[in-house]
Amino acid sequence: NKYYLLEAEEYWCNDDCEHAKTSYNKAIYYAKEHKFINEEALACELAAYFHLSLGDRNNAVNYFTKAYESYHQWGAFAKTSKLYEFIQAEFGFVQRVLTPHSLALSQNERRNLDEIPRKRVSSNQ
Image (cartoon, rainbow, N blue to C red; front, side, top):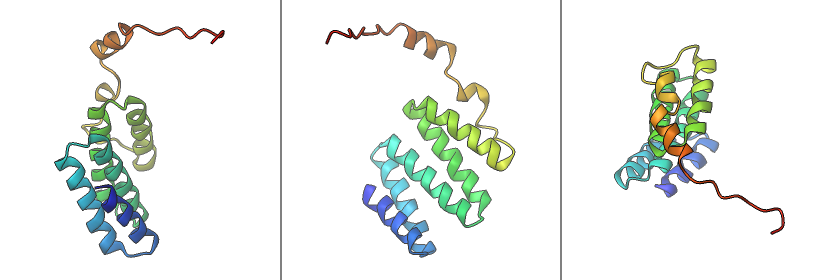
């Protein structure tokens, strides 16, 4: 899947849009197939920027939505927050699945994070 993602980016840089689309889709497919959620999220995000650069806003929104969902599933909440803000600023709306509730950590998730003991770092080390 990483190979296909790099291939897609190279095709995009060389203005070979049809091959880029195919390679982005392969990268997404194989990342999903092998359960590499973080790589699926990245491939979806890059595919979204690719489609946005072509003026294909409908596909861009769909890929951004998939990227958001994958980043959220992976637990990259800071990234989902930034992506949420970008989608809202770029498109003037946010897909119905990208609600502020799904964006933020739930109270249970926050509680779980708060319960993790923090290691104190001494300045003498």
